[in-house]
Image 1 (cartoon, one colour):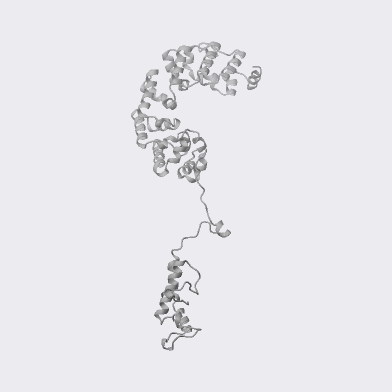
Image 2 (cartoon, helix red, strand yellow; image 1 turned 120 degrees about the vertical axis):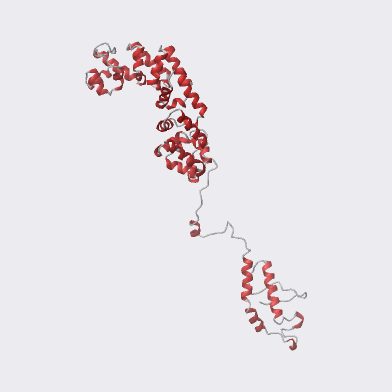
Length: 390
């Protein structure tokens, strides 16, 4: 490396033999070369050489070949400095051109949607959603429920969801029931565990067994969202409004658990219809409701139409309807077709005191073939031909 000295003794601007680097590195390397050459015997000043000859034989300066040999003995020191300085160079730019082979090896994670109308777009980004799907939860149904999707996206599976799943299993919800249960009631995953345990403890205090609680909760998924006070008020309403005993009240809600979670207005209206419009006595209503709880949530229009046909067309008295209230759960078309066929055959007899008596249960509950052969005493073909005439 040939280094010239300025009149001020400083190093020259260029250093031959090295690739161009940053200005600071260039100056550092040149200073180093100048220092090593001077310490080895020095370089002649510009004034000491003219015409390419040395100024004085007494100076005893090394020859050019010796200078080159000495310079070649220092590559390790220079390389070390270069390595240290290159460590400060910033990483490659994101816009650096890469080969196709490198490009295909890059795996880009899909971006989380900022907003979406479906939870399906978030399943790949949410451990909670992925595991709920594995349990059998139908996210297409969950997202139809108000704010249910937002709730699930904020929950951590290990911290929030797992403890609720274990609680539901302790209550008696089976593994294959968890998916359908959470599809109907995803909000329970955001409930406080202690509050849920308190509600179950209340049901146990009302003498509901573990299996009965499991049956009620599985058939009425929203039940455990109700506070203890609300559950107590519901049980008290049916006990007092219908005049039922504690045991009968408990049996009533076991048979139709949604009575505890549904609205009370339709129930009150149906009780009013039975008493005022249909003419049943309070004790008759109590018996009808206990035998057929669905009558409390049935359509008022359908209830009145069925009663009108049974009582006014077929001549069934109130006390007979009280004995067989299941007839109100049957389709009016089925009742009408079978009654008209029996009337056509002269066998429409619903008075238990008369011969060939046919109970309302036999009228509506038997399959067509059994009804024809055992009740109507006719063939299935005769019944089908008769229906064509209606």
